[in-house]
Image 1: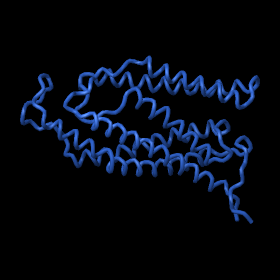
Image 2 (image 1 turned 180 degrees about the vertical axis):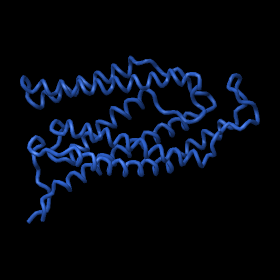
Image 3 (image 1 turned 90 degrees about the vertical axis):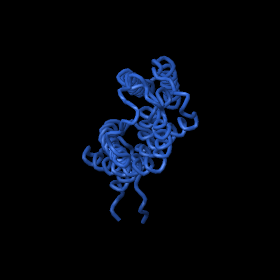
Image 4 (image 1 turned 45 degrees about the vertical axis):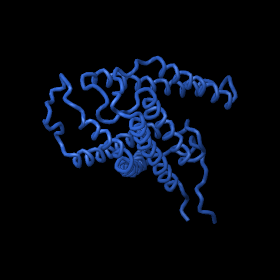
Length: 256
């Protein structure tokens, strides 16, 4: 007798939210560990290089720091541990949001199994919450960015993120309204094209970052930090989707 899970249409196999939440929290725990590992192995390399460059800079007028004054409130080791713990906290928050969205949209997500649906949602989450913001406002290593513009940068980033989420929701709503008048494949194509066009307009139209890249920071170091930071987020989203999907699939397997 085969032990492979039965493929059941989403609308015919309701899952209690508690089951989805447990699966997503397990996925979040795994994602936090993976994110912390990637942060330690990849992201720390350009951070240390950027800190070395920053340490060689002379005093900047108006910065409130004088030559020889200690600039760090915490040791580098404490900062590294704090960054790894932050990855775990971010993964926990993502896991709870992931569970709520997965439970709500499960019947509408592409895929015939919960594993496929979880992967699809994780891919969408990575694109909307990580990739798009990284394209418009890419991460920068220490020494890049004026502390006086942090409020402006935060406002730009959060408003852009909210607009991307809203646009994605509108695309999903459009997809749900089209099938009555369009073939399923045609409705999917139209909604995807509409959302992608909206993303392009969003990236092009939102205000640019107010900070310029200092000439003292090599472009290669900037891109190394940006790509490694994006790799950390991508690894976390992939782990969250894979582990959550596997747990839900295991729950759906018939008893042998």
